[in-house]
Image (cartoon, rainbow, N blue to C red):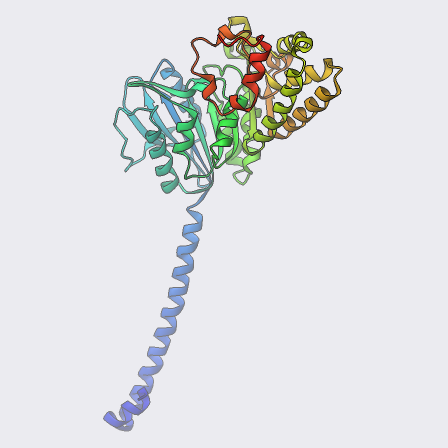
Amino acid sequence: MVLYEWSTKFFGAEGRRDSLKMSKQIGVYALCFVILAVFTVQGSLAAKVESVASWTFMVYMDADNNLDPYGLYSLGLMEEVGSTQKVNVVVLWDGLYKPAYMYKVIKGDVEEVKGFTLNGVEVNMGDPQTLKTFVRFTIRNFKAEHYVLVLWDHGDDVSGCCWDEHPEDHLTHPEVATALSKHHIDILAFDACLMAMIEVAYEYNQYGLNTDYLVGSENYVPLYGYPYDTILEELNQNPTMSELDLAEVIVRHYAEFYQPRPHFNGGVMGGTLSAIDIAKVDEVVADLSVMTKALMSNMEANRGMITNARGAGMLPWSEYGWDLYIDLPTFVESITRMTTDPAITSAGDAVSYSLSQAIVALGNNKPMESTGARGMGIWFPSSYHRMWGLIPYEATKFAAQGWLDFLYAYWNDYHG
């Protein structure tokens, strides 16, 4: 029974007129309610969209060691810019003399992030669970279209990074890959020494890390670390930049920061940084395996050439006794230039091309530019005896791809 019939039956004509009036009012109210509901939903959706930043810049700052004062320095650089509506800057900072706290960096200061379970706890930054907890909480609470994760601390090539003194522990690369396995991190950046190594990049490639670019140095990283102020300033000015654009920005500002200049001790150090496309590293490894097999086919004739190419690829740390690593692109190009074997030439050209595709950005200060740092290092001790004291190199996924066999052949097949 419709409202008109119901009102006539029970209230008569007068009641019918009142009923019609009331029905019109109800109709108006209903229409207003629908319009209000639509605008409310649209407003909620708009608010939800606006709450998603373009970038969240995460820094896992393990300063619970002799780098403690430089953690404060890096944090100060971040505070010069701070977060905006489009860029979140968050830090998990574990110092030498204080427990860990998670902060949102704002211009001129930091704000403790409430609800983070590890605040005020003496955490183990070398525990992958700590890294996992930080990244998971950040992604849930600081939503963004893109994510950067900076691992800040000491780095030691295939051994890993983030050495914590309380307790004594560090993150291995498999542990980092496991901690990040359920998240997409656009850029994994190491503010740490010796991370732009083919062994490191290949490890993440083989673990299937859902990350586009690895940013790191094939040399020492000076104590001052990254120039976070200029990096974040450019990101805030252009928050819509792509992940490759930001990787290039980090590399460029790093090289500019360490250019030699008066009254800046860091300027005389080896400033080199590169961005590596992780997905393309397996092509480099496959091509390099072909090249090493070609060299091994007549090692006695090629050993002198290999020695000279190794020397050409050595970087400045060798002056201080750290001669375990060389620059891979320089080594390969030197071999190609010196050989008269067409098979080696062809293989070397293939490696050089795949390297050019994998190394997507390179920044050097003048000292490193002159020494030939080309963006990716490789482990190449002068003899088998130089292996002692290192973690087992054989445990890396890269070693099994022919490089270790090549080294044994170069060392005259001596296995100890």
